[in-house]
Length: 238
Length: 238
DNA sequence: TTTCACTTCCCCTGAAATAGTGAGGTCTGA
DNA sequence: TCAGACCTCACTATTTCAGGGGAAGTGAAA
Image (tube, rainbow over all chains, first blue to last red; front, side):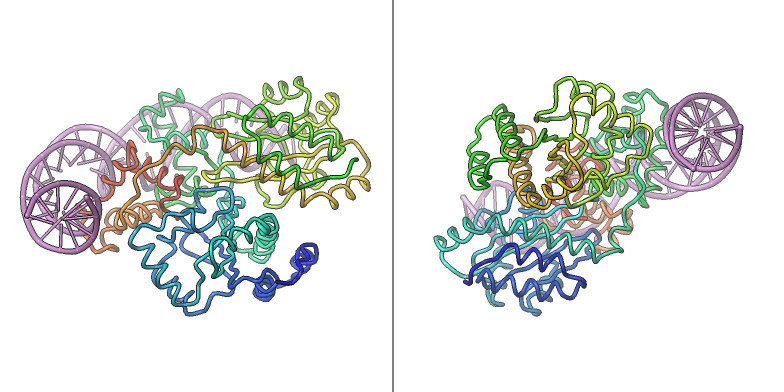
């Protein structure tokens, strides 16, 4: 493992001007950190994904086609946590998780992993992962030595991905009005229309108008969809 | 400005064992960075807020009582951005924003600010801000020199605040079965029961059983509530 | 082997959500 | 000052959902 120059890495990232270049950057990062794999993976609503990294194309294809995103303990675990996660600390006990893990090993994925959850506006969620094949002690030393660098790199990496994805940003919807936020929040908390109207001291008719205008603003097909969108875009917090 | 020891700062943060100690830490951070103010501010859904920092208690009181949270360009701006924000880049044109700014100056808030948005699971949103009174050049030098350190410190600071927040972590529920995940995901995507039943190739009756068992597992009051819980617990991704 | 979770299906009724339209008022920014 | 966004309420009609039952086959785990 060569000497790491964090400044240079972040400077290179900053200077990147095209989405395609991120693939070269991440390959260089893998080499700089001396690990088997390094992957950036942006998980988007509606199953859309952007990723780049050094996993073999075959494995990426399988991951997608098997819809492993839904059961991957790394994704699940990082989605619920704030700080980086060592794969060992995740729950691999479910059948589907073990099956995926076995299959991954066949495609050259190492037994050790360290993933950094990244969150942006409107519920953006991405993962930055270092993967390697080594024993626990060596991996503990690696993560201890580099977790801070990796957090920063993940941060800058996502910033760049954000920059290159104009379409994603445009998905942001108009902000909800205060009353709409109230209504959607209470719906998400499980209250019935009657309870909410009562609690907001408005009629159920009025309440319905808020819900419908929120649904319209969010481009949602129905109320539940609107709640889901408002939640994942961070417009309401339950 | 004394020599900054990032390692020591993060180690101290890591070693913190009580919420109250964060106030001392942030005061020490202000001194270490040699700025006028440093503030951490966790914005919660129901208007609940936790904050600590070196702003004068009077200003904090006014900020809360005037409900400036809703109009503060710093909050608004950071909520829509991913990378740290220099206050100069924000839109201070609205009357309420200028009024707030004038008032803030009277309470010792400096003209320069640098705020880092922090996001956690469940739409958590917090701000970490450095504030100072100086000219633009000096501030540009400061942010250039310290933005990376501040990002990391903000990250570790929020992690600690998270740790001390009792409500969140304790909410754990049984995992959903694959079929339940399918059903809940499709509901969250806005499809109707008929479409979902069709798409999963099951009867609507069967679909309903999945929804109800998911609702039961999540301890939800109704379907929308169940979707909201599944989303905020990261059990489904839409 | 037996229990347990998961999957699949069926009946029913009353409650809730959706859709369309109209019509006042306030408040704020250009 | 004036348009536009927001908040408030009303009417009626149709469609969909929720919640209450019950039943039965599979596969895995204890």
